[in-house]
Image 1 (cartoon, helix red, strand yellow):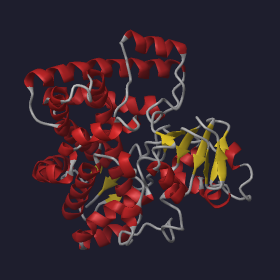
Image 2 (spheres, rainbow, N blue to C red):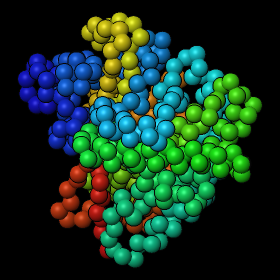
Image 3 (cartoon, rainbow, N blue to C red):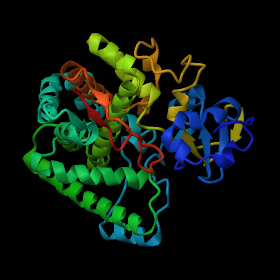
Length: 413
């Protein structure tokens, strides 16, 4: 949003508008300076744009409930709700949208398989997977890195970590994308019905997969959760297992795909950064953190006030929905000097908010970091001459939170 003193920011704010879709941090720069907390009439939400205010809300689970985190940002129509009811769709609390006192005991039971020491041994398998995909296009001299690599790898890895059998990978991956649009998109009419039908089918398959894994056991996050249910039936219910299967794949797939795509876009549009990474692979881990800061794949997240609160000097009533603009907070100059500059050597890049913070910090962060690091290491090692195809323009899905380019055409000699 350009110009002005901040007056009217609320009226102009549209997370589905062209300016926001193309460059979300820039679209909120005026608000961050002049009107850092405001009520959006369009969304009927309180929008929070500055780093320290966002961090305070994420930390304060007593005053800020996570219960609305997965509610559709665009309310479903009557026909779509009826369609979902026909599938028996029963969205319930999972880790991301539940509050104390239930949240922490469940998180402690479910977290161990996703901790860094458990994820690190997967490096060899993930690297072999990435290498196989690169082998398929390395001799062509051109590729769409979205379709040929970063769309595929996180889906396969996410299902592997979840414990889903290989034969269900393609079907489950397609449903996961619809879940992202269901939660954060603006579908209308026929499109809303199509998405609701896909979500209902995914709900059915998720239940079947939980039953399959309960019978066959195996390894992975969901088999671990099933075992924890056996030991703690009062803490983990059947409904929670089915919801975990649904939402867990969305988190593992779409957000990591977009984060990797955003990282590659940043590097390839700034060739000096790409060249520096090719020359010094040890810089890859910090480049991952800087890309997560600069171009996060999760632009915003939601909370609801349990009581009347004051945030950023603004009074917010009790029971108000709050939209925390993660992408804007990651560009707050009070924390990240010269925030619009993409700097793979930025010393505090890891302070970004892209994985959340506090008791709801993303359990999958170690896996996402590992996947992004391996993909960047392999591409810079094998295709250092990689460059964007001439005339490349970037388009994004109409999604208020999950953000990444739909295509990334590249070529090399």
